[in-house]
Length: 402
Image 1 (cartoon, rainbow, N blue to C red):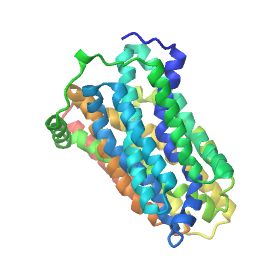
Image 2: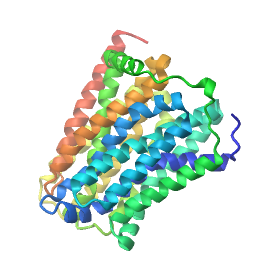
Image 3: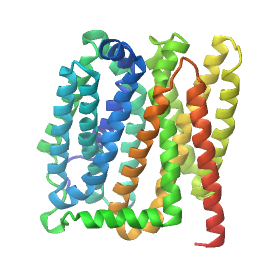
């Protein structure tokens, strides 16, 4: 199908679909104190589950949205997913209990997986080769920048209409996206190119991936890296608020850190061809073991609060930077032996790592005790485990050369 949209308009639409996830997570960060105070006054930490419940739903949705779009078309799957997202946001907006908000957030995550995952398939349907890579890079650059501004946007909405207004903003955001897509973008996948959805094929892909040593190791390490990222996201607002008394300036600090760490993808693209994906991941995790161990040791000392704040912000930059030098490489390592089932493998790898990372981050977030110790200790354990597994992967590759 010929794309009737201009390049700029198409990239903007795809970037908006990508941004659904970042907006749904990062815009909620400034709202956690108010939600905790209103819906869980006896245990304010439980408000952090609003983030991990969404991530859990997103992981579940990632299992199915790609294969379903191959069977029924791109636009119908995005439309159904977006309507589920809108319905869940409306339920969360009207909720009077944290449990109902968490259930709605799981549904919202399932719905949000549709525009995020299927947008990549649309790009592949309409463009090929270097043109696709160029347009994907531009869309991903916009997607990378968006998290820097999402907390500020969330804080502005809260200041105007309260935390429930963020869920109304989610509804408006999704409505704009699906109306834009529905009016301007014809269905990219022709009927004759569709493939029926078969659950046995999905289960077979899972079985093949978990029995392949390199793929299995890369999925586990990817889970640990995402677990570190999600654990940091769940704790970062309480850390700024409770430890450093900087709740008001948190969105600005978060935005600055996100912009700085966004350069990791540029660095990775510049050197990964010379260094190799496995070494890049191994070095990144090794550096994180050292950094997080230092933070854990320093957090037990009686340091001036300003000095501790500088240490934390620097470490936060390094944690987010690490995501840019590990996640893409680990995904590529896992996908390399799975070329014969590439589409199915992408969905399964993303789903497994996301669901398990959410399962790790949820209890880590609940351990927040007013200090950096729980987060630093969790990152030390995860980065050390990931580093050991990458060294083991290297030994496997040495024994069985590719």
